[in-house]
Image 1 (spheres, rainbow, N blue to C red):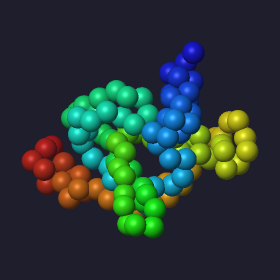
Image 2 (cartoon, rainbow, N blue to C red; image 1 turned 90 degrees about the vertical axis):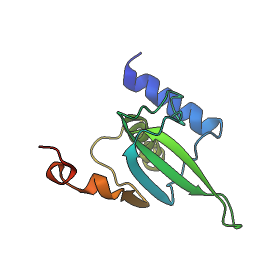
Image 3 (cartoon, one colour; image 1 turned 30 degrees about the horizontal axis):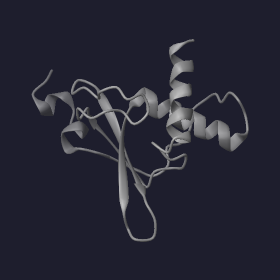
Length: 117
């Protein structure tokens, strides 16, 4: 099975077992890997990787739950959700990321502003 096929299976499993919702997050952040496990593939999010943190409301009491995922796992999760929405097996093209995406200030700066070249 291809890497993409395995990732799709992991996405389906994460949703089926309740590890990750199958709806849009209320907020999404991107940043440096935090060292936690990816909610989809259960592999570590290394500091040299970029991760997405997804925030979901957990009911009317104002609670939230956060999930950390690799970019490629997030992409597979979004594709899966789009396929479910469209009722298709294969979705192509770009898709919208719902919710709010926030990047830390140092990630918005160009390399020259961070001392890089």
